[in-house]
Image (cartoon, rainbow, N blue to C red):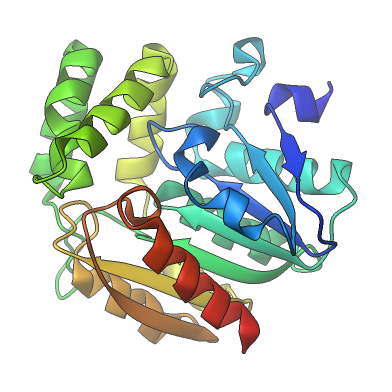
Length: 264
């Protein structure tokens, strides 16, 4: 299979250092439209869609392969190798931050630096760990997704985005959810919200930046601190931005934080 067609890969930019942007649940590579062009003058910018999202090849989707993050990790590694990339700066949002971390563990020769935007290794509270949700919350969320994905998308997108004073941001995210294949999205939701990759965090030796926003209903600030404490080579930036999608709501601040990290 042509993996570049499968994942709807787009390459741009004038620089030689590769920078790969990966979107989170319910989005596609257009989520990076306010940020990715800012890096084109000094990076080789790569955008792609996870199978099931955006312009990806829906016929490539297999419920068995994508029943865990492993299928998405393998896809990511295949895309990087198909492009002949090395020493990649991998920028992943939410679920894709976990995908990037697992890819860096599995293929450390490919990923030089990780930028983890609003990451979470587990969304479920467990003892002292505060993931943001009880297991009952997550089971209820998945039940709603199963029964009415589009309705959930329209109602939850503004809350996930935050920034209530800018309703157009929530509308943009809701539109992205609605472009996602609902059957695949429901299965991906189980992968994202039921996974627990806390044990993998200390295994990631890649230099990492954790970008944590204020008032994130999906990944609370405690998760950002957890990631920073357990990633061996990490830097934590507590942003002024709020909500779960600072690359969309605060692209200038997000871009500045990444540039500062890469310059060190």
